[in-house]
Each structure stands twice: as structure tokens, then as C-alpha cells.
Amino acid sequence: MDLYSREVIGWLVDETITTELILEAFHMAVSRRQVRPGMILHSDRGVRYRSGEYQEVLKQQQIRSSMTRKGNCWDNAVMESFFSRLKVELVYSETFKSAEQAYRGLFECIEVFYNRVRRHSSLDYQSPSQYEANYYAQCE
Image (cartoon, rainbow, N blue to C red; front, top):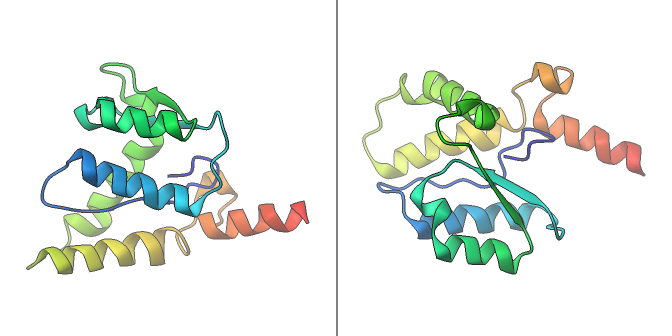
């Protein structure tokens, strides 16, 4: 998630969380954004985020790694809030019969609704994509 606009820019779903899955979501995110040296990427303290392979990719991209302090959910509050809403609005209300169906549901929820429609009080009641569009329009 881009913390400025709250847009979800890199995500994937699979039956298990692997370093490869995390790296694929990372590559999706950096393909959607200009990565500048010194950019900060924040995550929880999951073993995959601490892996040498993941940390090396960040280093090669000149991205600074930031991790939640042990036992402090407030450090990652924006993502915790997003996952909470995702569970309430999609996961707990649906019964998926296949991984493909789950992926389609997540795609609709994230790419169609959350990023383009859902309004956020922290963004002056605009969707993430509206907020970014307004920012770039002001830069021109």
C-alpha cells in the first residue's frame, strides 16, 4: 500500500506465504511506482520479510527496509486497518469454492472497489485513485 494515497499497489494470494510470493507482490508494486533511492518500505516482522533474499532485493533497489517493532501493531496500523476491512467486507461474507474464485473476489475488492471507489476520511473523502489524480493535476 502506498501510504500517501492508501492505494494498494502490490498484492497476490496463494495457499501459502512464501518469499517468492512476497517478491512477486513487491515487483507488482514497484512496477506501479517510480522507485527512488531511499524510499522506505514498511512491513511486519514476518520471516519472509526478514529473509536474506528479500532484503537483498530491497538493497539492490536502494529501498530502506522498515519493520514493525515487536509486539507493536500501531507501527503497521494502516495495513492492519486495511486487512480488518478486507476481512469484514469480503472474506467473512463470502464462501469461495476455488482459489480462482478467491482471486477474482480479491481483485474486485482491491482493484475495482477499494482503489477506485472507496472513500477515505484521511484522503478528504476521496478514493485513493482520485486523491492521486488530484495530486498529479496540481503538479502540472
